[in-house]
Length: 226
Length: 226
DNA sequence: TTCTCAGTAAGTGTCGACAATATAGTAATT
DNA sequence: AATTACTATATTGTCGACACTTACTGAGAA
Image (tube, rainbow over all chains, first blue to last red; front, side, top):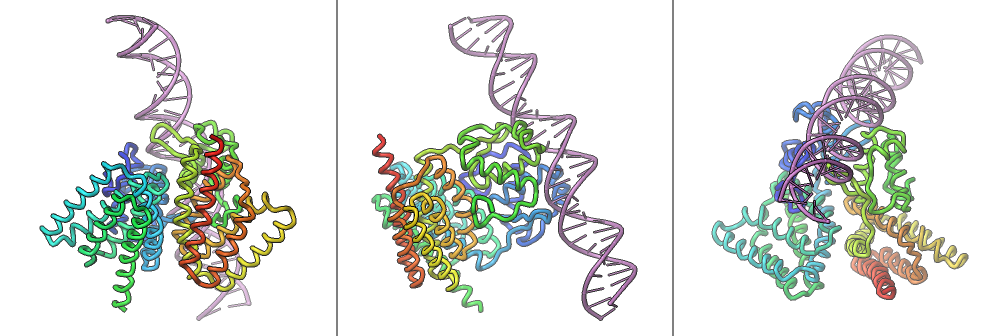
């Protein structure tokens, strides 16, 4: 399981493995954002040929983690406040819709599973004051489950396959363990309620507010720093 | 200019050119949807090495036009009603948001440009009863301009870079020149008005209805055929 | 007949080398 | 001194060959 992403499947080929390693490295900043990628150098460091490395680079490009220019080379995508806010805008739209679809398409079993997960989060929260755990793992788990619950393959691909790698990268590199943990937990509860009630319209609205609140939280933080 | 997509840039490398040719071929059905792709065979037919072909295949995969399995091979993505409806759901969410952002971020010049374009569509419509022209080219132009007007690179990438290739493929292969042309034109007008008024909320709502109407139109068609 | 299990053929993954292109540094000219 | 032209170097794009995996074919046993 790579980075807990539920859509990644077992890496069989060496290009897959290198891709996953580089994914980790980019997300956690070992390979610095904005840095240029030297194919010969990286190929040597991973002990593979350039062809194989290029295959891995192609997958990273699919996730929008690197950008390539013909005859020039690849760079790791640059982290910026503007870029982060753009992602939040897309998430608000897509996850809002995913939530609406989840209210329509989720099975009863999936809904029960989500409620169980939320209870675990609740106890973990009470136990260790929850901020770190909840923010880092629980939050992503929650969002992943809703997305998968939409049963819409396009939504799942775009969100889990591409956008969430970027989300993780920003979380890692900007060190975001916000004080919204408690509030976010309540919001998650209400979203699940709406899904369980099969109220797609409300579910979408709550999810959009939930994500918009995170975005505004960041905007405020930025404003304060200046 | 590849398939009129405003985000594609000049193809410099041979892999680029082969990619564009294959893109055309897949969109218009020359390479049949669902068919398996033989690397040696295709490489020979395009007179290039397998490496170069694989590079092109990687880009097609980025557009979600083909799917690859390790050690097995690539297939052109399958066209299905369910798949088409999934795309409409994603478009409703993303283009709705793009429209909201366009109302916020479009420059006055861009808005004027859109109004001009719409007038051209109007006259063309009057001239040739418009269904074919408007549906095929004008509609896409309109949607592209709104998306670009969002000034959100993530939205632009996902919609123009990936999803709209699929949209074009479905339009080609399902032969969709719907009788919604006239109605769609009016809807486009109102959307531009909302953008010009900088009313993001209304703009998003109108765009969502516009796309949802197309989706329902297709759902009805399907229901009738059965 | 049907199932299992080689053996073989075809296809994909990986490699190293060569060709084409861009970058950096140097020298010459204005 | 600044700018341009050119050369040298490094990097990317492309190629053909080999290694490994998969899928098919056919022979033999239950």
